[in-house]
Length: 76
Image 1: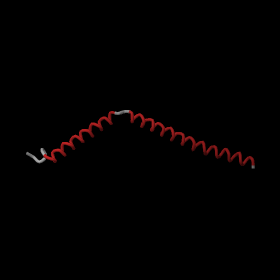
Image 2 (image 1 turned 90 degrees about the vertical axis):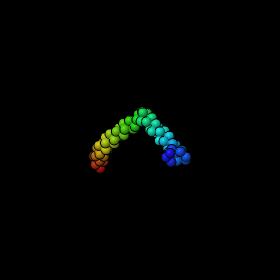
Image 3 (image 1 turned 90 degrees about the horizontal axis):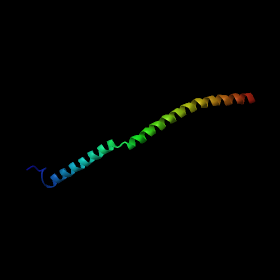
Image 4 (image 1 turned 180 degrees about the horizontal axis):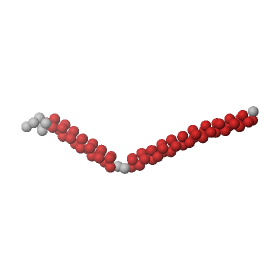
């Protein structure tokens, strides 16, 4: 009889096996769950929209500055 089959070592090994089985099961359930991926997709879409807005605003900002500078020079 091996020391891993009985006594406290066997009990610990059995508990570790059960914990590993539960962890693997939870991980597989997590992979099957698709509700988190929807939130991630919305986050990626929001990031893309915000990058597009920043790019447009930078372009518009420089044009607006030059337009206001023209008005200021015309008023002076």
